[in-house]
Image 1 (cartoon, rainbow, N blue to C red):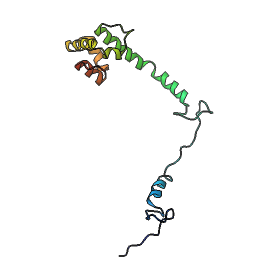
Image 2: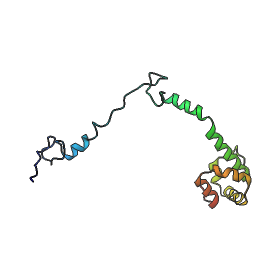
Image 3: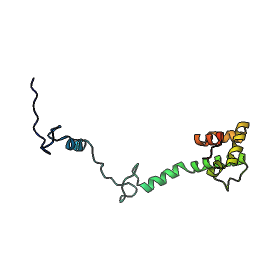
Image 4: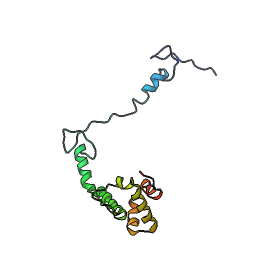
Length: 143
């Protein structure tokens, strides 16, 4: 069986033939161009002068709709968690942030003692904490 010798590539005759009449570098740069479709530009239904972002809406309307649907839930969860932890640590939740609470060694010690003692407020706040926050309380490592 004889092997057929390929003609030199049409793009760079000095390079070895790779596929479809091209050298390796040109073939790899051309490979996916015919397979991908360019996204068709569409306008939003809410504001026809703006580009479509998601669900037929422009970016601003989509963000407003998302915030309205989600409400204040993330902020309320944060405040509830902070309120419970501040009650356990004996600090004022209006003057303390969660970062301040978890970066103070004395507060971490108070939270750890309350957690080990089975304080009901700490037990209520524990599921709301992230893993790094739990480890900071358990091991006294400042975040």
